[in-house]
Image (tube, rainbow, N blue to C red; front, side, top):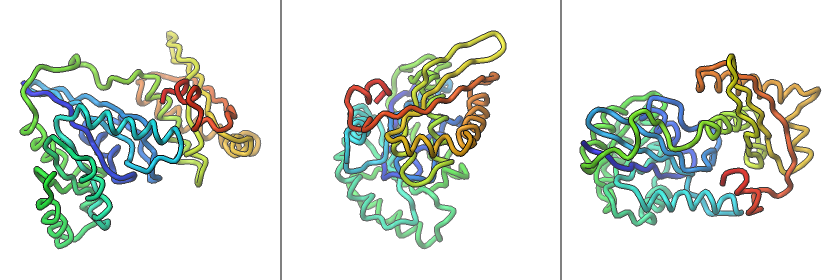
Length: 288
């Protein structure tokens, strides 16, 4: 039996969450084309007859600007401490200097596989040049080229991971998909819709708090608060005549029902909490 922790690191928007979902075969992490979507360390557990891999999606590595960012970077630090294998993901089409600096600064003490993502958009020549570049780096044990979005190359990567995994007993029961509670994923699915429906600053000033999660005989009743920093942001999320919040609720409910495999009654409220991203007590309350 092989088991261990495989943690994913990289710049914001390199495709970490898409890769995690592709490896697990389930939607475990919310995805957006906007940067800094992931705020928590999300563990997802893949258990088969002869191996258990605990994958961790981590927030994109950034320079912290306020307390929420600091909490996000603490999640990255804790992932460095328990990793058995590191997946260092980068967009194959981008200038590699920044990613290389980030990977070098991690000072990894475990084997690292460099994952060149979005390969479907790169020429063979580009792929070969970048593969050669990373193979020369001291932190690099192997290089895998793939497209996380199209799930091309995922099985090949998984074989490489299992080969490097240490021998050991499973850490979690076979049925577990994550160490996070169901309420966390429900809140994340609502937050994902905020990223999809609203531009500019709104998603970054928003978090979601699940206030009620009650399983009834025919459905699950969920009451969620969408937390924003300013009254103007509340107005934007509500929309004219409540149009936007209705759309947000409808989109989120469909995904939550698919995730839970049950009918859902979802109530959404918008609350203003000025400067919550810099308030230690409020960050704790909101699960950071």
